[in-house]
Amino acid sequence: GEDVEQSLFLSVREGDSSVINCTYTDSSSTYLYWYKQEPGAGLQLLTYIFSNMDMKQDQRLTVLLNKKDKHLSLRIADTQTGDSAIYFCAETVFSGGYNKLIFGAGTRLAVHP
Amino acid sequence: DTGVSQNPRHKITKRGQNVTFRCDPISEHNRLYWYRQTLGQGPEFLTYFQNEAQLEKSRLLSDRFSAERPKGSFSTLEIQRTEQGDSAMYLCASSFLAGGPNTQYFGPGTRLTVL
Image 1 (cartoon, rainbow over the protein chains, first blue to last red):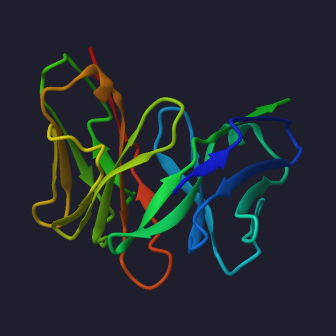
Image 2 (cartoon, one colour):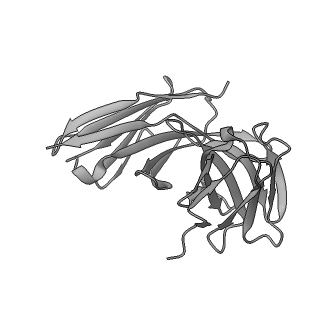
């Protein structure tokens, strides 16, 4: 089946690193995504990783992929109050001739002083 | 800004009324998607277009829902005889079919409240 699981909440102190975890079910997923959603807004693409990679770094963001365990993580270095938002993990499932995105329920990140 | 735009941003309606939302994708994108997001959940796929052809519809899309993309550019999503359970954020996304990730870019959403 298609399912993406994420922990619901994470609280960190400003300046610390945040690690948001995600597990997915479709071993044939080609790309895995992280999106950010601020209150009342749409989804902002943060980064993605191709399934043949183990790690991708983009400024303060590091994505780690363990394909064997179907586990994806997003690390945010030097977390700032502006990083407070909901973070969604999404896997791609090939269906009907295109790559369908299946989202988790999101992890709410709260950054406190 | 040439991102995905959606109108209106907010819509409040009474149960039983019809509503229509509009999505303008990124101009060179040939694929367009509609999602529904309820409180505390991630987006759920509703339907998708490649150019003007509607190629897939979720079982979430009841007969009261219809979507069009008449000229392969903007799209509309209409909900007839709205119900309180239709209250949600409706998100549109677009992507460009080519080699590579076919990454979807989202608009700001239309928040529907049915009273």
